Image (tube, rainbow, N blue to C red; front, side, top):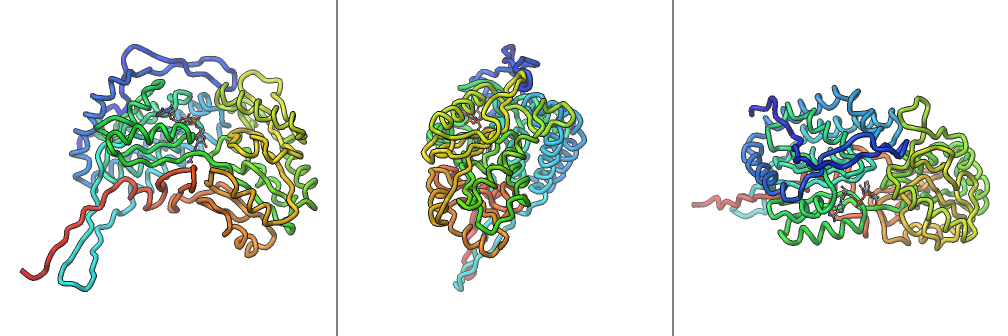
Amino acid sequence: MATSGRRAVSGGGDRHFAVVDPATGEVFDEAPDQAPDALDALVERAHTAWRGWRADPAARTTALLAAADAVEAAGADLAPLLTREQGKPLAESYAEVARTAARMRYFAALEQGARPITDGRAVRSEIRWRSLGPVAAIVPWNFPLQLASAKFAPALAAGNTVVLKPSPHTPLATRLLGDVVAGALPEGVLTIVTGHEPLGARLASHEGIRHVTFTGSAPTGRAVARGAAASLARVTLELGGNDAAILLEDVDVERIADRLFWAAFRNCGQVCMAVKRVYAPARLYSRVVEALADRAKATVVGPGLEPGSELGPLNNAAQLSRIEDRTARALAGGARAAAGGHRPGLPGYFFAPTVLADVPPDSPVVTEEQFGPVLPVLPYDRLDDAVDAANGTRYALGGSVWSGDPERAEAVADRLECGTAWINHHAELSLAQPFAGAKESGVGVAGGPWGLHGNLRPFVVHRREET
Ligand code: NAD
């Protein structure tokens, strides 16, 4: 496969849109605003590239490993740009770049595995996995590179080609990643398009696309599924979460406070599987609130590029006003801000890390996904009530149980209705495990061999042995 000098980023014509630095609220760059009509030629190019790409698994592995090396080598360019457009502290952007390269290497090395099937009859069947064709990957703004790689790495490793659309809030690091990997991948194998709606809607419903893999909000996920229905393309949806952390009576509050705090506040709370509600036994309630509030007050809030910043701004103005609104409604309903509850005196989209006590259980900050640095802590008397409350939402992405007795915690975790249940931690994943939400948190599976197979179809050769 000849690869050098190719560009994965598609140019996009003359129109551009502004990209805002969330730490200042000011425009700092721009990206191409591609016309939806441009998709026809780009999807066609991806279809043409598929013919060569699907044919040679060994060449794919080599190319993907070279692309991963290129991403890692470009960390010093990718990470600051990611922080500038997304807001997260620089160390977290470096970690995101490293996870992006690691995921590319993981899928590059994963075997698809032709598999014989026997059922005792004089026939022999064998599954030979086949790729699907051009895949549309649509990504949100909270982990632009990591979530992009969670889509393009398994799709490309499976032999598909990809047209990838980042969020218009965070187009730049993804475009740069496209440039960085262009020397390793043949033309048309990975195409990056940027622009405002209806670009995503048109991509999801494009007749040349065979799989739409989407991460984002549940309402947009529904629209994507409706769009993909037109061509009956396969759909993988990774949507929202409202994860609960249940603390048991024997938990060592001071010992877990830091871990619990960061499981809720990392990336300014803009994590699908962050802790979004804490349920604490009534006897421990004030200690839990106090320990989390102390941690919140000690957190250094500031621009992600400033050394020492632990918590950056929210990514965009709409998300900031959503967080302000949810917090104001909780406070108006009788909640108390044990920490934060307001914007700090900084420009940009900052919101002080906020711990809410005495929150009405029907407040939107409890019943809906907040996706920001605001954590409601709720007391419980009976453990069954806490489990019911944890399960009582339309989302079911993750959940956790915290206890000095991991066996007991695991028995409680087994009752959680979600995709991943953690014991004494939260929101950590391994590349090799499946990641899938239940209920309205998603459709399909990412991660591990399941993520690869979400991009493949079984092709079965069924042979009668006697002639
Ligand atoms: P969003 O749904 O607004 O946007 C996601 C992507 O879809 C963006 O690229 C956007 O431009 C695009 N888009 C918008 N309208 C579209 C349409 N009609 N058709 C096709 N694409 C369209 O989500 P967001 O605000 O960018 O991200 C936050 C949400 O993402 C939260 O709900 C969060 O929980 C969720 N999320 C989920 C996971 C997960 O793995 N489950 C991970 C991260 C974020």
